[in-house]
Image 1 (tube, helix red, strand yellow):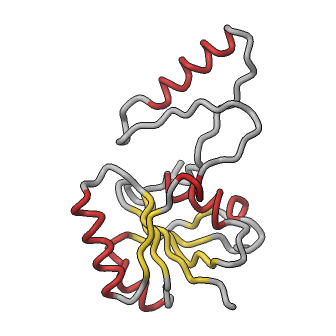
Image 2 (image 1 turned 135 degrees about the vertical axis):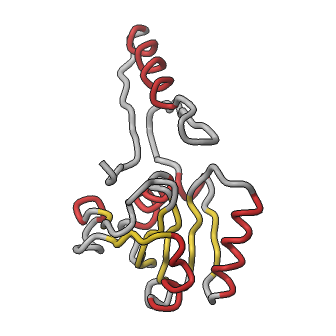
Image 3 (image 1 turned 60 degrees about the vertical axis):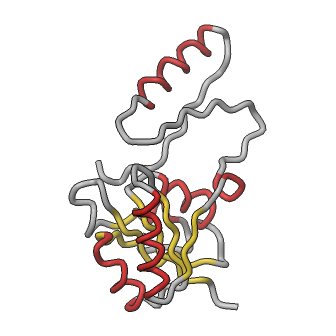
Amino acid sequence: MPPVRTLIMGAAGRDFHNFNVFFRDNPDYEVVAFTATQIPDIEGRTYPKELAGSLYPKGIPIYHENDLIKLIQEKAVEQVVFAYSDVPHEVVMHRASAAMAAGADFRLMGTWSTQIKSTKPVVSVCAVRTGSGKSQTTRRVSLILRDLGYSVAAIRHPMPYG
């Protein structure tokens, strides 16, 4: 069975995380594009081949979200994955309607598909929107844990926008 042609909608965060933990080395899917919003001037760039893995030797192109319907048609996209926050439910459903009207399935990915596997205890610092202080909180929590004698590693999604 050929891989499911997939487009991931995002804002250079959760989209790249979902790609890395679920799609990157998964031969059942072919991610043909990312769309982006919220990050200025990211469209026209490419998710780097060095991060994309062996299935994507040229990387993955990033387009503006306004091109969603055209991309679904031109790239024969079978599945659209919505992977960003900071938007109301109504906006998500409008994106779903647009994707499905253009012929693609629409998907939201949950914890079991996207969580990082670990054999060690994990502290996750999350927020419902950009700019709420996740980086500062992570630095403080890391410092406290180090002071208590724990080894700490911070993991962040790739940021190809600079």
